[in-house]
Length: 221
Image (tube, rainbow, N blue to C red; front, side):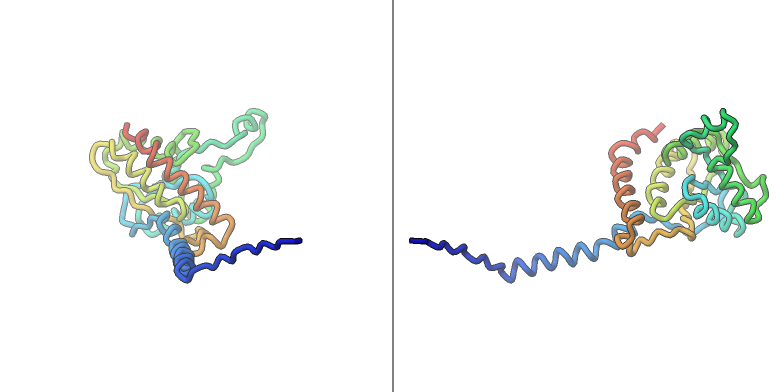
């Protein structure tokens, strides 16, 4: 005799389906907000220097040039960043332009004079390193009390937090205005539809967590 055991049919209640739908809708509505939260964009004002952060110089330098040509500042400040293998190749006689030099070349070919650029020595590996180097530079220049920060849009919010925190220990108040480049390809409203933008958002939130949990306390000096 064969006994057939029927599995009970589990019916999903309308309430469960409504809750599930609401969760999906809320997640979908929050995605653009997550992208926008990474962006800090201030109205540019006349300032002492433009600080150009390294990385994606073909996108970022045009933003700095635009501010310079509009008369918001007459100096573009960059921190020499660390390039893996650069020193080793240089010692072997291989001549390649450094990131900062390539950025400067772009600016000059866009019409800026050579004396518009100041490249600070360093082997910066992070935005924090750049902020500390700029802070040390400003420490001996009390006449400088304002800067325009140029970087990519997805990076602008964290960069402003870092520079604001780093310069807080200087005598007087340093006004930090974030002016992300308009040439940036980042789409904060639809970032999840692009693989590169998705990677940027995930990394930025991880780096933001590191800033709040650790990095900000190292910038108090």
